[in-house]
Amino acid sequence: MSEFVCKICKRILKSDFCPVCKTNEVTKSWKGVLVVFDSDSELAKAAGITAPGKYAVRVK
Ligand SMILES: [Zn+2]
Image (tube, rainbow, N blue to C red):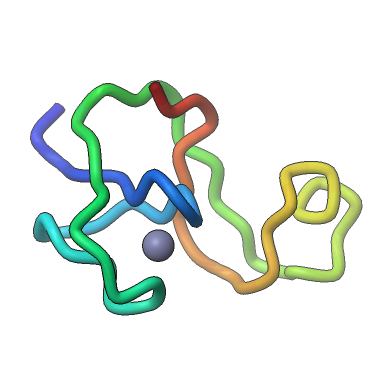
């Protein structure tokens, strides 16, 4: 996989900079894709996600 993931919010990114956290604390060591459509869902709450988007399930 060639995409980056933000270490803080776990968003899957197209570049090595997270525009949400304004950080370059990113990693390529991640597994699994979690797509969140509704940030009020139990799934999002369990994962600590507050906004819809694509997230990594596991980040090193
Ligand atoms: Zn982030």
